[in-house]
Amino acid sequence: MSYAVKEIFYTLQGEGAQAGRAAVFCRFAGCNLWSGRESDRASAVCRFCDTDFVGVDGTGGGKFESAEELARAIDGQWPADAERSTVAHGRKFVVCTGGEPLLQLDAALIDALHAQGFEIAVETNGTVQAPEGVDWLCVSPKAGSRLIQESGEELKLVFPQNGFDPADFETLAFRNFFLQPMDGLDRVRNTELAIRYCMDHPQWRLSLQTHKFVGIR
Image 1: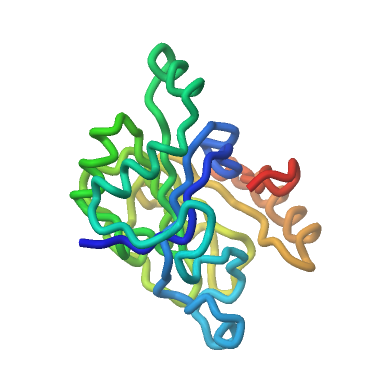
Image 2 (image 1 turned 120 degrees about the vertical axis):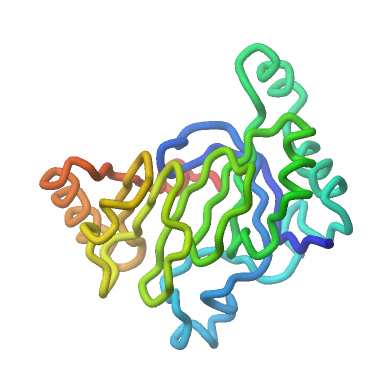
């Protein structure tokens, strides 16, 4: 199987339970809830996505003809100094995101990344069942889509979304529950709503997009 990747880059995870952790991001091209073209946004299932996942022309992006080739490209983004640190302090960390990464992530790539010494995190919209072997699964449901993946390490709900009540997700098999204020013109108001909801419902924790605040990718 070949893999279409928009970009691969080294940064800090900005959201959720792993916020602040050094990671290689592998952003897969393509999504099943929006084409990625602005002309299609009004008719998309997810209309608030702020990510460019179209094509393979980003930093480190391209077409990779095998799982091993892609795993080597991801490993190549992990700095040598950080490599020495992981020997003493833990595994390298890769975040597979998109678009929708589970349209492409498969057992072969999971095995190849593990062989390179990576702990594998996935950020998914939950409409595709995750394969075995993912180490950290973050599901971010989108209103208007059918949630298939109902378990994982964290559920991260962009808030508010019309038609979605956080209470509807509270019995699902996730270890962590996050509300993340929807970005955009109403970001301040949405943040206030998310703060109040988390204070009134302590099962939920606030997730902020810290990478935007500090100016990193």
